[in-house]
Length: 418
Image 1 (spheres, rainbow, N blue to C red):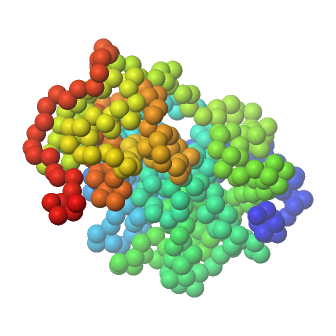
Image 2: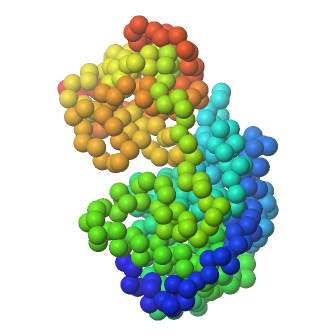
Image 3: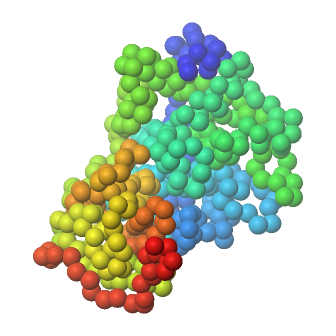
């Protein structure tokens, strides 16, 4: 993993690199901080609804966000989408992955909401802390699902894809593309937004193909900057060394915040911040009021946070009249970091690092009004119930209850199925 990228870098100059000469500011070594804060300020001052299915930025807002960048992407699409604006897509990814920007449903629409507690912390950070926090977030902890990226495992860090990209520079610091197709072949799995983030962080310099009608942001040449060579080599070598020494899975090495600080923090005196502090209130108390919908049928229910997700499943199935015998299920919730967490049937096997058994108490998962949850029952018939948290009350309730029912519940099995 480490040898390929190191062949392109002068080892002696790397060891003697004067980090004191690297000045991190809103526009140096790249424009990531200035552009990130510009788009953050837009969401602070405007109400923006999220797209219904993927929870992305609506098409009509994308060109506005693009104009806020110091170097807007030049595209010639008649009907652009979020992939058409790679810099905006990359920054949106970081905003959602940091938890600064969340999604909540209020009334009929899901909209973006600023996490005020995290915003107050963010605004007090210096440029060094902001830069390296975002860099580590991007490389190790951002979920691909936040930007509807279907490539790769849902909880695999982007660092695995980056290794393959960086290995293209194993013999030289430049990548030159004869035409747009050649460039598109390179980024097919990586994504144009990932290359754009390299540019925003000052890791690469670029030469663009002239924009043409029907084409997006395409590059003719990519060159690793000295800063990019250094940061990539240090991280690449450190990860390879730690895997060899500990024989541990790389997931365990990059899982906890602070890796970049441990490698380069001594070169930057102003670097103190590692990660946002966890909320002081880690458990919910009281009663939760949900609207549960399945096709044209819906119910409103109340359940205490001391109950388990398994209790919530029983309540829903009793209301809809489904037989739960031998059928598995899961509750899926997207947390403020954009991670898809599942609470699964006790007989299921955990498939991902954020999954938990449904026997855990609901209060251990922090939720706010407007939180959406998908409850999937019976993986054969794949019944998907949509839950919306409508109200949170501090007063506990003794047992789960059904408040009202609307519509006719569907039959679990067709008449001739059994």
